[in-house]
Length: 413
Ligand SMILES: Nc1ncnc2c1ncn2[C@@H]1O[C@H](COP(=O)(O)OP(=O)(O)OP(=O)(O)O)[C@@H](O)[C@H]1O
Ligand SMILES: C[C@@](O)(CCO)CC(=O)[O-]
Image 1 (cartoon, protein in one colour):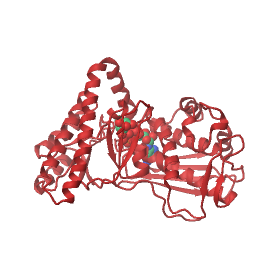
Image 2 (tube, protein in one colour):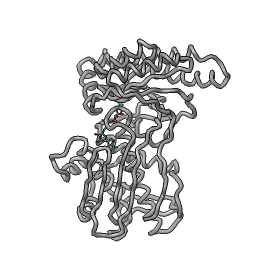
Image 3 (cartoon, rainbow, N blue to C red):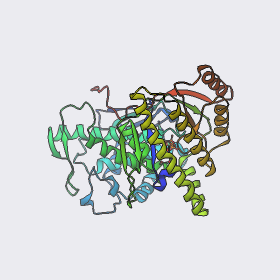
Image 4 (cartoon, rainbow, N blue to C red):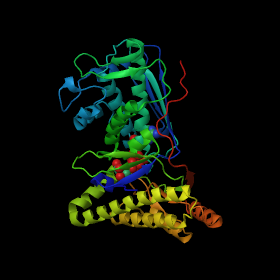
């Protein structure tokens, strides 16, 4: 709740859904091999020569401050646009936009994350990355954020493992001479990521979200990193940087996701809204303020719902209020041009059976979701889902408040 308006400092909330992106990372124990990136969702395998990867890592990166201020913990110091331009120059020009964006993201992280770390040529062996996802790519359920977090966490974890075999365990400065110190706690075995790790990973993932969309809010990558539910811009400040709060508890809601199967591009939709803002600022301010009110009310009602569940109270009214807010927000998003005729059809089919759908993500196609209140008549819900499928939509039930980043199945090769 709060799509688009969160980019204008308004409040929003997002939750992790139980659909995972998996990244398998394997070091290849032979120096001369190529680096390999297998993108299952895009049906693309990329090979890069070891010499090429070593060269892009060593090349100086454009920064907003001196190199002596930069380290693995400070990705925000990279002059993003200049760096991205240089990354793109290393890619063939005949790639599809999706593949080109993804490979730009991979090269960005590989070349910038290793740059400041004190690992010699012989420490860095070629590796193979295999990426697959249960999420539809580019459909409004945060696939790009999920990809960005998976990739930045894998490289970060690899750096820590390599650093611990070089420096030993304990607190060590892993920066190369000439860079700012980066002191990390290196452990013999890792079972997961600490809060410090997650904060660093999240910062790098945000850089890749910028590769994908230009000016993202950072909400999607924060949700993918930390899991659960995250509120953005809860504390109004003059800062340009949004603030994030992890919500302690969110009621367990039944949610149905419907795929309109209409492809869309987040960056294009964000630009469309920005253009409308430039044309009609006063009216847009008013719509964005309304979106802010709706999102705040939605969060307040979710908390109220949790209390009512705890006290065994009847939750019917709160569900109706939440659904009312979803209808209002869908109307506001439609008014700024980010719905789509197929999303409108989902909403109409839902209304006929008393389910209230709202688009999710940037809109323009992609997914819509509805809450299924506990008292909803099963036959009505089942019929609605059948009607949606009969009209060519894809329906799936999802868990919300799901886990974020996890490390699993570590196997030595
Ligand atoms: N599993 C994946 N493998 C490789 N690249 C991916 C994967 N998932 C997403 N991407 C990259 O992310 C881009 C989609 O980003 P986009 O922001 O448009 O979609 P989204 O994140 O699903 O939507 P939203 O930001 O509205 O939630 C794709 O073009 C592709 O470059
Ligand atoms: C449109 C938008 O609000 C939703 C993307 O999931 C963009 C963003 O938050 O970065």
